[in-house]
Length: 187
Image 1: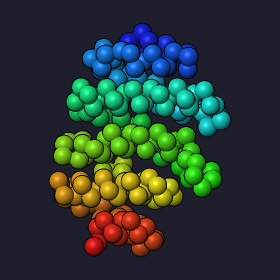
Image 2: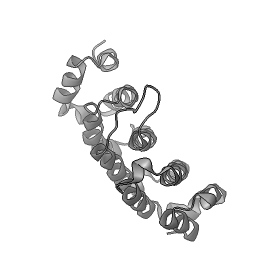
Image 3: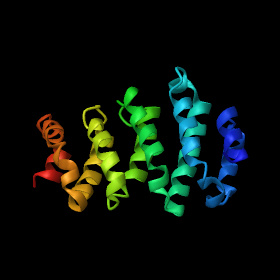
Image 4: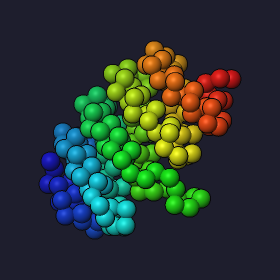
């Protein structure tokens, strides 16, 4: 792993996290899967939800990592690690604390979802992502579900058969009143 990225993640050094944006994408691209594993460890710690420093470090690192993945077009290389981190968010509370404030894990899920599902035209990535994506429909975060419905509709246009086996979960979500899914898939 790049020494700066390792320093920021291992020491949770928020004061150095901004320096990650001064690195060239190619300098850190080779170690992004390893960095995502380290982020998964940090975000899974028992005190993560109450630790503002750790949350800020994770948010900055995810922003830098997803940017590097987009710029180097290396989603196929790091997609599995991204999806693993995304799926780990399902183990935590995703329902907002108050009306306009997402939980730390919902923020992670949102950033990663965007990076992964913007690649709806890459069937190998979408094939890995869709089974995880539909799990988020039942987790009680309306904003995540709303955004997810848009991405799932793009995936359906590109590769409908990937969603076919998840029809029951999607229909169940529609029947539970998720109108944005109805508008996406039924109108």
